Image (cartoon, rainbow, N blue to C red):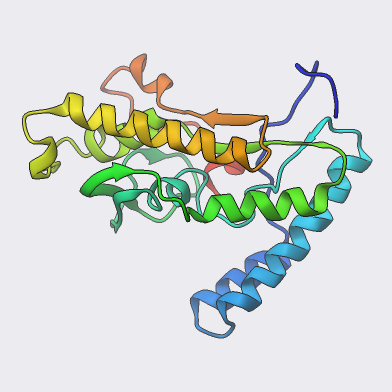
Length: 219
């Protein structure tokens, strides 16, 4: 294993190859099965890992190739969290726009033992060989931002969190503690928490346009 910390690193996400995008479209249209899509994902991730190692990266990732979005896929698989389709995205982007979506709470927030990202990491570990593995997940603040702050006009807390937001924050924190331990138990020693919420603290309310970030938002 490489000595940490590294003097250089990568974000962790990569643009999808054309044949992966085609497979995802076929799956969405019911033309291929979930197992067939997974086989394509396995192949493209293996190819990426080989490229990452060939150029000398100290830690490799799976490119986030199994995800639709860099953050929602992880968050909506938490217990008590549900994906909700929307007409528009919660923030306005310049240029290409992602499909609208948000998150809502349906029960106590928790990290399930069968969260799919655990099996994703296990596959990466099985093919990476003697090299560090980097797992990326959205930060806990992203869940609160999307479900509560960006949806403040329509947010209705469930009974558990009504008049007690501290309990919501406590449940989110405990869920992430479980997640950290679960990845650690699988051998993960490099867990990156991705966060784009901090920029919203310094944005004036009149600002409607956010920079386009292809590799993070549009995969």
